[in-house]
Image (cartoon, rainbow, N blue to C red; front, side):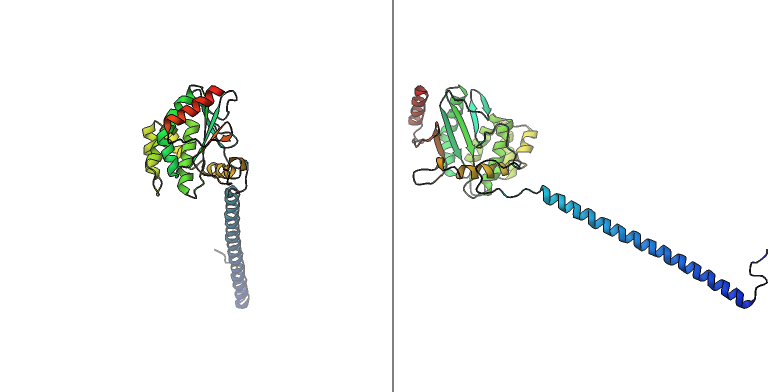
Length: 270
C-alpha cells in the first residue's frame, strides 16, 4: 500500500499531521457548537411552552364575582331552569325558568346554612311544592349564600345542579341537607349519599358535586343583596325571606295552618 506521506520530508509530515489534527479539532468544535445550539434552542422552546401554558391557564381562571353585580356576568354559567334573578319556579309539575303571570307567585330566598331556613324547610317545603304542582300558584325558590360560609355555596351549588337535572331528587336532597345542618356543612361523601338516596343518578351526582354552579351561587347572592326592593323597612335582608306577588310577605310561617290559609286567600283573590 502506498502512503500519501511517502516522499515527504519529516517536517512536511509534521505539518500535514498538525493540519489534520487542527481540522479534526475544528470539526469537533463545530459539532459541540451545534449541540450547544440545539440544547439552547430546546431550553428556549421549553420556556416558551411553559409561558404559553401559564398564559392560557391564567386566561381561563375565573375572576372573583363583582360584589356590586345586579345581573349575571357573562362568564357565569346559569342553569337552564333558572331565571334572570337566580330563581327556580315550581309550577304544574314542572321546574322552569319562566313564571306564569295568571296565578299568584310565592318567592322563597334560602341559605343552606341558615337555621331558620332549616325550620322552614321541615315545616313547609313538601306541601308547598305539592300545592304548586297542582297549578294553583307558582313557587319560586332562590338558593343563595349570604351568611359568609363556603358550605352555603358548596351545598347550594349541588342543589342547583340537581334542580336543573332532577328537581324531585333536588328537593329530597335539600330536606336531608337541612336536616343534617351543622357548622361543618356536608362532606362530599355525605352529599353523594344524600343524593343517591334521593334518587339521583351517578351522572347527576357527579355533576352536582363538581362545583359547577358555585360561581352562579355567588353571583345570585350578590344580585339578591343588591336588589333594594328585597330589603325590609330597616334596609336589611335575611333568610328565609318570603315574597307574595313581588311584595314582602311577613306571614308567620311557623303556623303551618295559618300559612296555608293565607296562601289560599291569595289564590282565591287571584
